[in-house]
Length: 525
Ligand SMILES: [Zn+2]
Image (cartoon, rainbow, N blue to C red; front, side, top):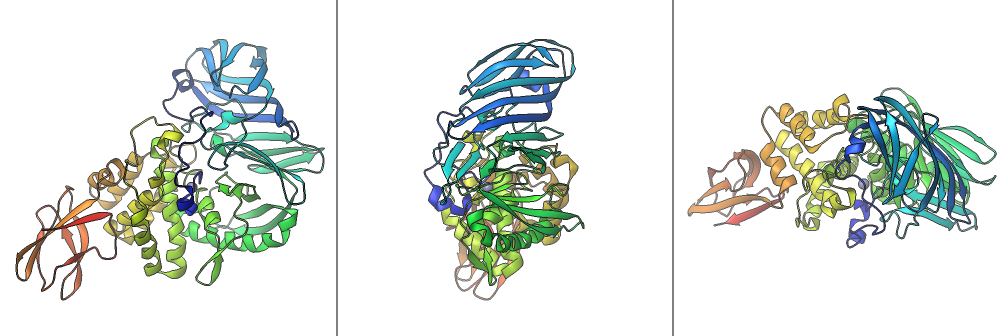
């Protein structure tokens, strides 16, 4: 979710606040919805581009855990619901406050709720930072439609249980009907594209804000990618025809990124479907198997190769956000912070340690530290979002790597992205991350997690002169020993420090952590 993406982080300061007309996505799970386990969504809509309308139906297949008299779905009020059936029988319903309350009497077990509806979806004001539909045209005058929903969720245009903790286990069938000649890009695999109706299907669990589509004058440029596990996966770029000549190079770059991400995070998560990219009128968003791309083919250079930082960031969300999904937006940093850390691993791999360290040295002045990264529990997306989740979350991983060492850190990071307890249908929490890294380290890392994620404090280190050539160096505000580099007049060495501290000999005032592995405050006394 590079909703307000870190890549252009400096550009987006001040955009926090989101879309005032959009209802919350996530937060405290409603009691009626706690009884529902979503299995699958079917969405079948005709898109009226000049009218900015959709019309059709959606089916939510779910299992209800206890007998229920209410099935509660989220759907924005801008739509009119004309009928609701449950397991094929007409049901009563009320639709207001962006909630569709279906009433009746059902025993525990599977139910299919079919909703027939139509209406005008919210228009995005500043996508991707504000959600909604974008109706525009490309430079040749062809219609170009995009959907962004990270802050609002699926309720933007289909009835759903709009909570990050419950993805449809068996995926989605998404059919969008458009006039002949237009192309619709969507998640998963294209089942058919007959007479203007594009039917996309994913059989993987998927977050609601990835259940979106794009319409444009696209052509498809493809290249095969072989994963680290030996799977042959198509890379498909739905690119505007006017930019088709740029697509092959873009896929070459994407293939390089995929190899490096697989090295650190494990195999590409959606090997039975595709690595997808679709050109959009907005900058980007991490839509599962069909990442939105709007960076206009602008590159920087890493190790002599063209580099697209925006694409690298969004693609990283296939692991952090899409495969490893926070069940509560309170833990948003797992998507953005670890994802942004993964962005830096591209530099580590291509240019080495010093270039990688520079990235984090540059992050330091950008970190606001005005509120904690994790604000509590049951937090909605707009409330949980904070610019610091990108650089501070990433910096926390940088610190963890230094504290644990590569032989523990990197296998544990990969395990977080591959363990069945924290991937696909199982969501992940900050506590899961803490537990996993603590177990791998063989010691409780809670104080470090607490300092970085639950407070706005920096690590405080005191350097106190004892006499003309001796200095006491100690930690001030954390109850665990940590390794720190200390540079004296003679040498730079790594020492384990705690609150008691150690005395070092130096003719000059010692420097602490000069390569910046910590967010810290050094107090000279
Ligand atoms: Zn992101």
